[in-house]
Each structure stands twice: as C-alpha cells, then as structure tokens.
Amino acid sequence: MVNIVIPRLRQDGGVQAPTLRYDVLEFPLPLNQVRPYDPERDETAGLSYVAWAKTTEPTRVPYFTGLLTAAGAPPAQLPPDEASLEVLSSWLMVWYPRVLAPWRGTLWEHGNDGYRIYLKALDDPASVGLHHLELSIAHDLGFLVVASARNHRPELAWSLDRNRMPFSFGRSKQPPRLNVPTVAPSALYGSPFHPPARLLAEAMWAMPEGINDAMHQYYEEEHATRRQEPSPLTLLYRALLSAPVSRESEPQRARPQPTGRLSKRRFKLLPPGPPTQAPRRPLVKAVAAFRGAGWFASAPREWSDEQLAASLDAAWRRTEGEPLDVGGGLDECLLQLDEERTLTFDTEADVAEGEMVYRSVLAGLASRSGGALQIRQVREDWQLAPNAVVISFRLNSRRVEFTLPDDGDWIDPGIVVELNRQLPAEGPRFYFFDNGGQTAMVVRATELERRSLAAVRRIRLSNSPPRWWLAIRGASS
Image 1 (cartoon, one colour):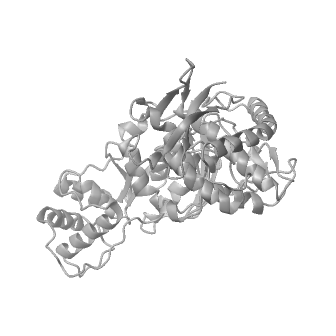
Image 2: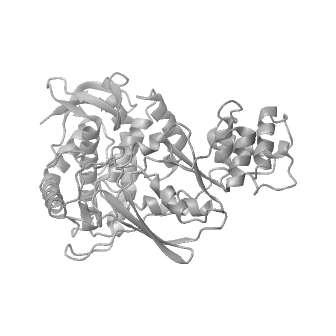
Image 3: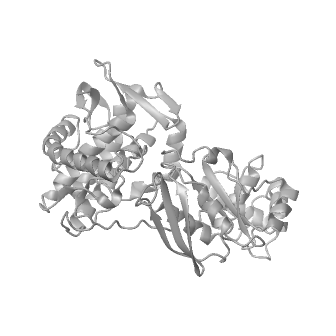
C-alpha cells in the first residue's frame, strides 16, 4: 500500500512537526477505465465495488477519524453531526492544500486528460496521481459521513444503483463522479463520494498561492459564492437523513437534474446611470454595428448607442470584474452579452447517464430561440447503442430523435447540428462562433443577420462546429 506524508496543523493553520503518513486506498477496479457498454461485465464490476465498500467502510472510518484528530482537526464528535461537519469542512479547506503543498508548482503537466499532479511517496518508488489521491480522501470522507448518518438511520446500506449504468469507476476527472454504489435508499441521487470530492477540488482551487494561477482564478470567479452555503459534506448528510427507504430489489429511479442552469442569464442590462465618463469610442462604434445587424433587440429602443454601450460595459464589469475589452476580443464579448441570441457554456460538463446535460443544453438553446422552439419531454437513453446516447424530445408538435457519440465528459457538438436539421432553412438557426478554446458559443441568427454582422464586424458565424470541438468526438470509445 502506498502512503504519503501529510501535515499536522496548529490552531492558526501553520504546519507543525512531526508529520503523519496517510495510507492511500487501494481500489478494486482500475481508475478511469472506459470500455464499451457490456451489461453483464458492468454488473459484475459494480457489484465488486459495492462488496469492497461494505468491507472497507468499517475499517477506514476509525482509521481516518484517528488520522484527522492527529492532523489537528478541530475537536468534534466523530463520526460528526451536522454542526461539526461544517467545522470539519472549513478545516479541510485549509488542510488539503497543505497536503499538496510539497509538490506545488513543480510537477504540474498538461496532457489529453487535463492537469495532473504526480505525488511521489518519499520512501516509495511508486507514484500516486492526484486523481487517485483525491478519490481516496473523498472515499474516506464519504465513509465518515455515511457512518454518521447511519447513527440515526441504521437501515442505510450499500447497493448497486442500476440506473447509473454503464459502470465506469472514477471516470470523471474533476471532481470524480462515481456511478455506484449509492446508499440505499436509492432516492439519494448519485454517489456519496461526489460531494467530498467537490469539496477537495474547491480546496485545491482556493489555495492562496495557487498550484495553478488559472485554476485559482476560476475558483475566485465561479465558486467563491459557495462560501456562504452549507458545505458539500453537510448537504450529503442532510440527503442521507431525508431520503426515503427502498429495498435493494426495488426498481431505482434517478432524480432528474435541474435543466435551467444553461438557460440562466449571466448579464443584466440596467438603465445607465449618470455618466461619469463617456463610453469609449470603439465600444460605441461596435455596439452601433451590432444593433444595425439586428443584435440587442431586447434593449429599449429609445436608448442611444452611447447609453447601450454604457449599460453593456456596466453589465460586463458586474459579472466579470473588469471593463469590456475594446481590443481584439470585443466582438466575442458583445456576442456573449446578447443572451437572447447566444448560449455560452463549457463543453467539458461531466456528461454521463443520469446527469441530463443534453436536456440542459436543449433548454438553453430553446431559451435563445426567440420563442421559435418549444422543446419538451427530453430523454437521454444510454443503453440503446454502444458508445452513444440517443436523444429524443418533442419539438413544437412532433417527436424528434437522433444519436450522438459518447464523448466522455464533453458535450458533443452534434446536439446543435442535429437541432438545426429540424429547423426550416429560411428561418433563424444556430451558428457556431470559434473562440479558440473549450468554451462553446452558439448564436441564433437568420442568414441575413449573419451576413449583415459579418459585413460590418468581420465576425464569422459558421454552420460547422470549430475544429477543436470536432476533435474530441467519440473520446470515450
């Protein structure tokens, strides 16, 4: 068994001697092994994982609680109750970055599967990847919360959630999403190890010095609001206590995920206040060009180009914390700001059975359609074809169905291409704007609007997905 050095913390958060050693869990299945769907094999793998969890939890809970106490975790009931889980979570946000500190900034590398840290045991030639370490601590925390909930609900037991098949252990990179086991009651959606893994990922992103500046900035921009919310460990604990009981033999129903996350607007246009300074001339000129081509039609018509430019700049500052770039990136920013037309999203979105990511994408596109699309009864079927997902939904008054390749964690661009095929050629449709990265920008426009904007701003809205997006198609096969 590989073990790594972990720190002991003083009450002020500083590291004190001597250090401790943490025995990294040995999992029963290879990490990130993605294979074609095989019901019999995946059932066997899932049951093997459930059996491992049943036998591992009783020994790891006392081991890990003792380790946390020795490492300086605040005095609390162990296994913890809800109040002490919040205290423990705050401590983990300080402690986990210290676990990674000896390797910070030196062993980062960027590969096809994103950033990884290789943690080398000081007296062992073996290396442990960050994903393996994170999964191990996430499992120990998950075991701890489950054991705590079982004090109040002794009927909680490990079982295989067959609605989360095909089984793929540890497939998601950041944070892990484990298909099984779930704790029966099966109404608890997803794995008990997902919330602890999310807490660890946020602790890593929040490191003051930053093991990676871009990740730290991402945390500050996207995750800082969670500081005012209950910790993922507390939310998991509440879910375990409130989930209805079901027998392992009963059919299990996965709770659908919310579909509105891509429909939400990030920018809110407010009437411009008393001008402190006139909007920059390049911005006003660009806004006038966009308006002339049909963009920002939802803004009050009585607003001048200067007023709209000021309002757009203020909206961008409120959301992004900086003024609009009037250089080469201005057109991209203005496209994003017209959220009646443009849907912007990260294409790496933890796509998997049960997550209903494609339903969220379709809801976002419908909300940008200007009322032309009414999309209802969306279904994702991951069982009908190997390495693929069958998407079906009711579009206006008819049923639509098509198949997309399984791209692993990534959203497949075919969701936009296939939706366009259902639209009349003479009306508005969705075009791709290539911003050169993994963030998708899908823009609604008529052919006339597209050409008008290209004539005044040299913006290329394409019928075809960007090359970088096409390159990840079928990534899981």
